[in-house]
Length: 442
Image (cartoon, rainbow, N blue to C red; front, side):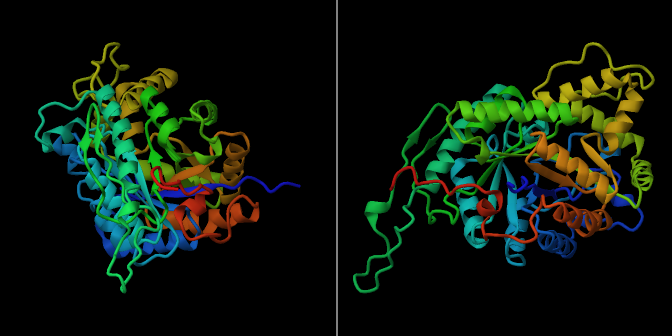
């Protein structure tokens, strides 16, 4: 008999919970998002549970919401990802370290250098989550009055990827000979100068750091829009996504895997890991009650602000007891998020108030139940080609993380669909991904 397919699990850890009420839950750490000692304990528990990676989202501005809502957000202060992951690399040995970095408001040389450094510091555990930045407020922190157009952001992102990967290949793996006798530190024949001149970018190179341990850090991509899916098919090795249910996940999985094959890549070298809130209880009813209790800690100010963010348009003036207006202005914010919110309201016939309260906590995919019922669902998604694993979102910390690490993981291991130990040392090895060949040297 063939071995069962294996799940891959990453932990969504910036913010430490996506649920707005997480920091207010009884027994949770209210400062968990900005307390290094707590975060160290979290990543060490995740490594003991054999998670593939610790994943950090990022924002280049405070969330674009009214201050009355912002004052209730535990995400208003967060560590810069590279600084934190560099520190965490020194207190862990195996777990992957994934950071988000923007192709819209940064430069390829900076990104290539930071990720190469992190990959060396961690002995081959770095991953780059490529984002084009959806928050329009970010533009104002980088000298612009208006957010860059959606299509332009993706055009730049594609070229940006080519430049960064080209810079990572500046040196052959064996370029640094360090010959004391001759006094030659590196072989100049094994140095490539990129000299990139494109429509969006002009970068000479070479990168002033040796080729990363993994060849390239693992490439993660999070867009679900049409250009986002194509960018993922062409470049990504892990896709972070947010389908609403099993059917939507299967359609997304088939589409992205199909695109990957169409561009000449092996679909098995791209792992699709939907984000999923996991709430574990002694019974299914107990788990549901935990989630209901958690939702009570979401203030309405935050709820309506979350709706505004998701729509990319101010919802505070909408009648709270009527459906969404038929006409909502187009914006440069995430089109995927906007469309999913509108579809949710139509599907469940929700008023603005009801929709806001749903979004104010966590409105995405959720598995709420016992270790056995959640493990059963995980197995179903894996077997039916809906996912290669999940990006786990914790409801509150530390209890929610402990429930997953100490109760769900052993059940997944008992069923033979999740590792009992790491088989390699790099993130590529955890994910079953090949080490890229250098584009410029054999």
